[in-house]
Image 1 (spheres, protein in one colour):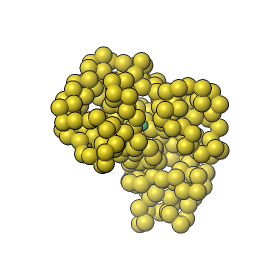
Image 2 (image 1 turned 60 degrees about the vertical axis):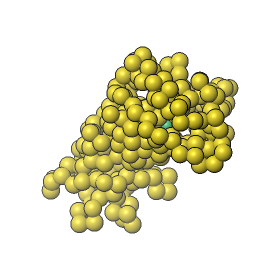
Image 3 (image 1 turned 180 degrees about the horizontal axis):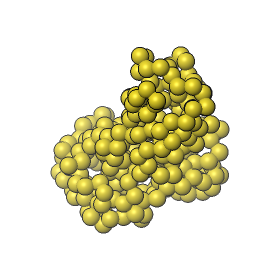
Image 4 (image 1 turned 90 degrees about the horizontal axis):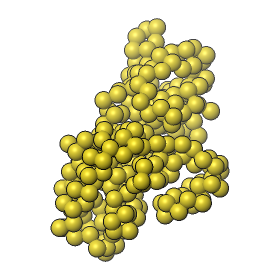
Length: 239
Ligand SMILES: [Zn+2]
């Protein structure tokens, strides 16, 4: 199993790792440890590069294949030997934008649940752009700016954000987690990672976040789309 460095330290921009296996089918590397987020929960995978004796090789795709994190190399790049130790760099600008965006989406979830009792049902993001779906029948056009203000107030409040893994049984005792449907997580997951924005939001989440809401910057919500009577899709942008 690859040690998920991104789970503990989301600010890690480069690291050394050993090639523990090759995925010949995908022309990819499996490492003993990695800071590359493989994608999931609406957050795209990280990008970056690996330094080899023959030069720097870009990594554009990282994905979980058969339960393992595979770092895809371009087809023309030669694969390093198993056991070799290499230095890796994340595309930090890209990743940091995603961290700010992902945290902004959790601030949005937290404020909407607190102010309207509406739960999130899904979401997706690209750097500095996000969309989230809510069970939010009462959402009206004039609420858009009210919600935007509420989100920016929590950014100004500079709330600390933390993450940790807890046993599954313990997670099921936390009401905030139950409302975000942790019961949908596969049963073989013994430990559940939770991300907490102090006093605002608590979610089961595998993604990478900034450690204070102030790092997000400014959020703009331009509009929403009705996806049915109950379901509303809110679009946000980080300025
Ligand atoms: Zn999330």
